[in-house]
Image (cartoon, rainbow, N blue to C red; front, side, top):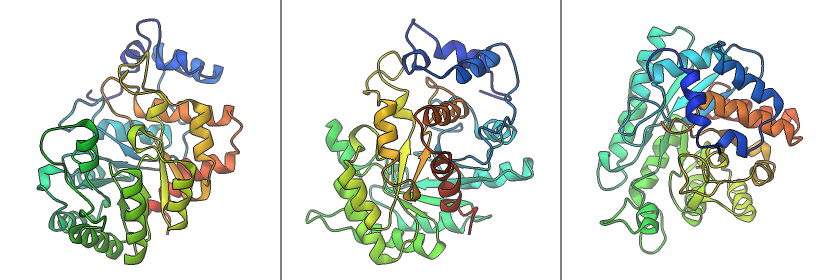
Length: 332
């Protein structure tokens, strides 16, 4: 999608086949009214609901997968909506260098990039690539993710041919190249994220990262699909100094959506997880898929759902504002 978000097309795409993510998740009246306004062509303005929000896990064009919006257009709309900051993620390409260019075109844009250790950078975790990412002009790479779509755990679970990229050796020890990336993240004071590692792998990574001295360890989408952690596993990671990321995407996919292969997470389950330790947690959308709602509309729906579930505003502020802002370096 180029230029301004075409919300009429977005709404039409979302409300298909009589059963959609909006209808099936019982959006509050305020959200329905807002989305109806979008259908009528109203502009997305800063009404306060999204003021100060930081979404630090979303996917945009350019990418090797189809996305709903490009990074530049998204940043324009995010600024209009009142967002404080954004960190883009691509499974295959760097986006911190593109954030540098976007900032030149959009003064005041607080956009950042990140870097995933997938096969485009080699068959194992690549410390050299990570080092170059943090040295790139502007210092806008604020997160190094362990392998995501190419993770060994995902390869094994999906029974894919070949081997994915490991983070542990056969004895369950963190590989030397992974430790090196941890050291790079510690020196740069940026996020070390577990990517698509298994829950148990993530706990081992969090323990090692604490030993190395990483201050910003993130357990990636601890509520999503095959990476879902138990409350006990979440608490173990928090005890090791990690921050827990919860993504709103699982509350939108599933039956009736265009990602029906996954089981939808109820808002009750979602809120029960995010309430375990709001001071050590944050919410991202993980949106941007061409067949799913636009990330800004997803974030709006998420906040409205949290409010409807009675989550204190102070906790919501921690989850979508303060904690992600600190993790990407907006707050010292």
